[in-house]
Each structure stands twice: as structure tokens, then as C-alpha cells.
Length: 78
Image (cartoon, helix red, strand yellow):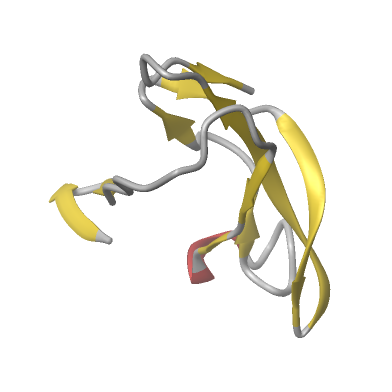
């Protein structure tokens, strides 16, 4: 990820499968008060769409992440 502001980070994925449920975990040490593993499930966007569906993801045990799907036009469905 690259910083694009004081509190904003971005990453680009160009090969996300179309119509397949994806899951992503964002680790951020500043959210350890909410989740001891640092997994962030708030204020995460994909193509300007707020991701809201919390799912389990593998890590140091099961950790929370977010899921979404992308259509052929790049539209994200949380």
C-alpha cells in the first residue's frame, strides 16, 4: 500500500476475478484497541464503495476481514 494522505492508504489490484467473492484483511496497528490483531474492518473502501461485510480470513489464527465482488465494469458490491 502507498500513503496518499495522513490517514489514507491505497493499493491497486488489476487482476481481481470477476463475479467471485473476494476477501481481504487490512492490518493496522492503530486499531489494536478494537481488535488485538490489528485487523481493521471499518472505513475500508474498494473503488469508492464502503466494504461492510465482515468475514473470517486466515492469519495468526482466524482474523476478521472484509468481502466484496467486482463486476466486468469494475463496480464493487460489498
